[in-house]
Amino acid sequence: MNGQQRYIAHFDLDSFFVSVEMLNDPSLRGKAVIVGGSRDRGVVTTCSYEARKFGVHSAMPMKTAMKLCPHAILVRGTRGEYSRYSRWVTDIIAAKAPLFEKASIDEFYIDLTGMDKYFDPYQWTIDLREEIIRETQLPISFGLASNKMVAKIATDEAKPNGYLFVRPGMEKAFLAPLPVNKFSGVGEHLYQKLLSMGIKTIRDLSETPVELLEKQIGKYGVDLWQKSQGIHHSEVHAYHEAKSISTENTFEENTSDEKFLLSELVRMTEKIAYELRQDEKLAGCIAVKIRYPDFETTSRQTTIDYTMRDDELIPVAIDLFHKLYRKGKPVRLLGVRLSELTNHAIQGSLFDDAAKKNKLYKAIDDVKNTFGKAAVKKARTVTFRKDSS
Image 1 (tube, one colour):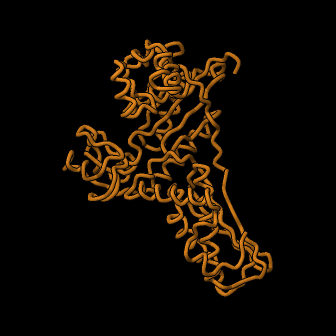
Image 2 (tube, rainbow, N blue to C red):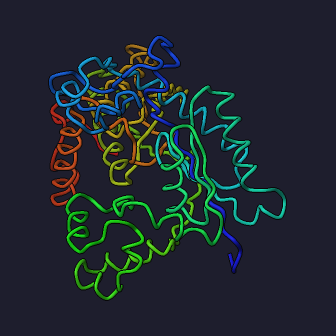
Image 3 (cartoon, rainbow, N blue to C red):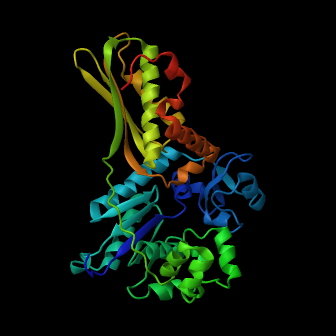
């Protein structure tokens, strides 16, 4: 960019899941609402600001949350609606922004560098926020700054439903009074370590000799010191919704064996779900393709809640197959495709036992990475295996 002044906007939909639930059920407005799993063993996905006043926060066990705020209304969540609203906001941003990154289901970065020749970046960002609110009725906050890190922290400071512009040259002054754990990567353990060093605020951090930070914390100490000066070089990575992951199998012999076809469908879905997780992505759409011996090809797709898990993708693939397949007719080719891919960082991963599921999938993937992809298979794919793609 050769010395150009950078302008990076960070947009974040406020209490996104709760906001969607309130749109669908206006009686929830102004009340303590918790979105998440069951009361006994679930986890808080997100909550309204009214619930936060009682100390409730995301990732908290539901039992704890209900003790803190016993009058809260518990909503199990309609994840398909969250995906729909997320796509709506994405479409509005995509139609206006010169370059944007979708960081998660409810979070976006927009790079406006160089556009100040044509318009005021601050006013442009205000106008975009107003359009999103007008079109979707969702509350959304933004921070505008010279880099992604400061923009994101500015958004946090602007919430709820507000905005903040940290003007170029004011990054260090803006950060200075904030607690040092405002930086991502400063977890509880590191936070306590910094407090023990007398470092409470980002100003304290910025005034600590970088050599001392490196000695006490290691290389991350140098990174933290740079952040405390308001320095951050991460780029906005262009969002490409068209990307997809797919696999298909042309059989050596045409087959109408439905059990075999379903076992292949499960195997292929499992295969591309594994690839999805390796790329740290989630899919918002799944399609099944069938080609018959006369080369007639049909396909069917459906939008889904963003996921990367076999047990959520396989039933949808099977349902699509049953809607698509002409019973008794031999099949030449079968295919599965996942599309509308987005980043792994997504709030929807906290429903019910999802955290345990994610650990299970990580363990399975680790085995596959060590011993080969065929090391772990679904039972139904073993019994009926005829061919492989």
